[in-house]
Image (cartoon, rainbow, N blue to C red; front, side, top):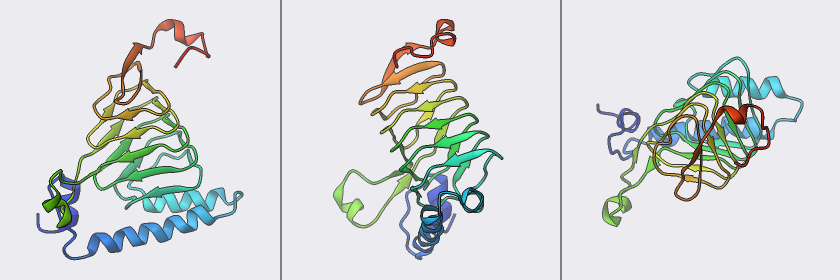
Length: 196
């Protein structure tokens, strides 16, 4: 692996020594400006921008503007994905989002990381770790998901949580740091207003 891009996607520490990553981020910003500045009725136009920018999408998805990402080409979203306002995805590593996933407002996914020691950080070294969100997950508003996290299917992450470690399937989890509060049970099938 020679290029900064290959190292970034593979999770190997990298510096953008050739400027390729800067150019690709600039391209994404230009596309997202078009997306975010579009008239509300231009739904098809906005959808086409996301399909062009992302690695893959389902047929049915909707992202409320404004939306921000670093590159776009590392993001895959499944069928019936919905993201509310002000979503930010720093997709230096792959971000894989399953089917029937809901994001509340101000959700942030960060695959990017920097060295703890200032000398390496000041030189511009970075690294990235992938994020996976499995099917049927609901991420509440103001949630931050850190690098390398996997969230299991059918799980709910409560508003304002900071997710620093993997969360298993079929649970309600919340807090800073985010932790499992309880399992989702058969009783929740009938109670639409259960405590989150």
